[in-house]
Amino acid sequence: MKYMMTYDLMESMRNTNQWLGSTARAMASYPAMAMTANPFMEWVGAWGEVTERAFSRMVVRPDWNIPVQTAADGTDQIVTIDTVLEKPFGNLIHFDVGGRDDMKRRVLLVAPMSGHYATLVKKTVISLLPDCEVFVTDWHNARDIPVSAGKFDVEDYTLYLVEFMKTLGPDLHIIAVCQPAPLTLAAVAYLAEENPDAQPRSMTLIGGPIDPDANPTAVTEFGHSVSMGQLESAMIQRVGFKFKGVGRKVYPGLLQLSSFISMNRELHTKAFRDQIIATAKGEASDHDKHNEFYDEYLAVMDMPAEFYLSTVERVFKNRDIARNAFVVAGKPVDIGKITTVAVKVVEGEKDDISAPGQCLAALALMTGLPDAKKASHLEPGAGHYGIFAGAKWRKNIRPLVLAFIDANAGDDRVTVRKAADAAPAATTVAKRNSAPSNVTPITPKAKTRKSAAT
Image (tube, rainbow, N blue to C red; front, side, top):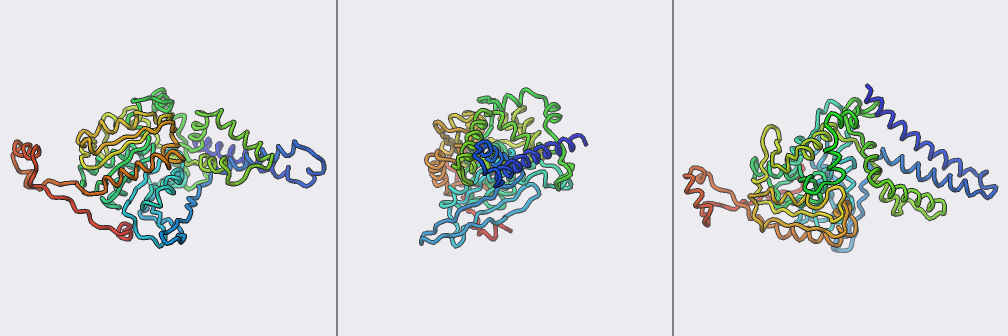
């Protein structure tokens, strides 16, 4: 009950600050306040407007707001969001451009479950839509998931990705953004052994902590500085009475947000001070650069406690992925079993969350993958957010990713006939070292959007 009370206390504090901002804005807008020139009231109103907006955004799920797409004939086509697969902790969604035939490039964008909604990758989706059929993992806010839905940890996350890939079929290209990169790698390795025909054609890992110790950051050091008991005691709370997930243990989004802000406190303080000044001068707008960024940045979601704790313990502390010792549902996952999926790693030179080298470690783990199917790119001057959104993504990284997808669009994967399994080991090795005559190419099954949804 103590944790439930602290959860409700945080929500009460947020609600109070929102109310204070709203009250200040309302007071400053009274006609009587304009009877005499009083710059102070203008500043009070500006502070109230910025404060109210900031604290109200923290509990609002952002809209995707995908703009219309222009077809080849010059007509504007509306983008609708279809749910391909619905699950308790997250859905597989598809951005359907009306009136357009299915694109040859089919991309599954794996969004982070790191305190923000999947809309964090909205700009990535917008940039890919003109050239790709885009699917996204749309994770749910844990505060809205009843306790009866059960747990959700890193193994469950991995199995969700496996199911999503099976649903979409092998004619698929994966782009994992930041936090899910290690688990996406594990999911593809899981498929490599359990269902190789369902593997995607390519996988692009963007700024993810495959090996956090390869180049430690403040995030890595924090993970090593506390014990799991301390972390659970300090960070985990139970959802309060206001939400459907009442009683569920979570890592609250408000705590995550406070951690994010504390890492760059001076930068955020200056941004809000400048916005208050701009509002007082009448220079701010609903869709200016500040509001566009912070409307998304401040909208946070709770993570299931099991997922948060198991991520810290198994990805950061024990380095299960980096040591190739990850286990899913009691089955060891061998990343070396990935032999046909082309892999590209993208990192940012100035990434302070997942520093250069952390994601690059993935290539060394894939001992069974030919070097010709491995690629990497380090974007000069790019921070963590810039490697999947913004000018550097649009102008430099996106074209490279699309070119990599096209270069690996053909299905050159092969499967060994069962007869080869019965051959003597020495004979099998000899055949592998020569041009094999007992292999046949896998022909991918054509899938329509309708069949994928079923």
